[in-house]
Amino acid sequence: EAGVAQSPRYKIIEKRQSVAFWCNPISGHATLYWYQQILGQGPKLLIQFQNNGVVDDSQLPKDRFSAERLKGVDSTLKIQPAKLEDSAVYLCASSWERDSYEQYFGPGTRLTVT
Amino acid sequence: GESVGLHLPTLSVQEGDNSIINCAYSNSASDYFIWYKQESGKGPQFIIDIRSNMDKRQGQRVTVLLNKTVKHLSLQIAATQPGDSAVYFCAENRGTYKYIFGTGTRLKVLA
Image 1: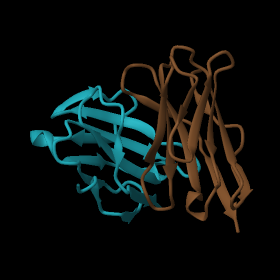
Image 2: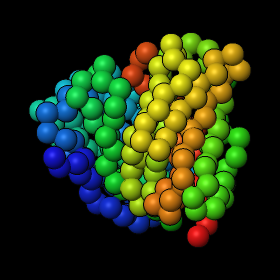
Image 3: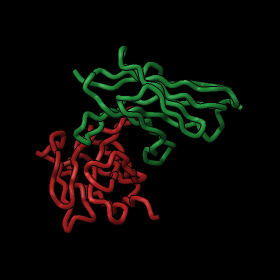
């Protein structure tokens, strides 16, 4: 079974620029998560989708971050404009259903904002 | 505030010895806990889980212990191998399928 795919793996941008990350979850997984992992810390949930609907985006900085999951499959996370403190690894995870406890993580996208 | 934390940021163990990684959580309403392993350049990988109605659960070479009285969780790895070198996170869930991760402990296995 193919895992969660993410691209790009690395991205370097200057502050105030915009960036987008892409995630393709495991086939059939209805729930998709985006996490932010700052160096030396555990992942922090940004947004959770159930199919193409948002379940929880309480920790998403909505003034600069946006995410969508069109057709309930792939998802994109966008940052515009980026700040220095956005430097982190952005992880995508998926699970079968909202009430499935086991999440499968992708390799992440390492973002560096200079 | 509510948080999940770890006592030791780095743990070094000799190959073949047992490892114990600890985690403290603050919310007594948490009903489910997961240990994840994260290798460099990879996403977290599920190791083992435990529900709040249990105090011990065993897997292959790993055991998780839960002490609800003191809100403490531990991961024991038997006969630690070089491949066990990674950062280990505990995560708690309070029934909302929203996980709160701890800071992580780096496990270094010495040859």
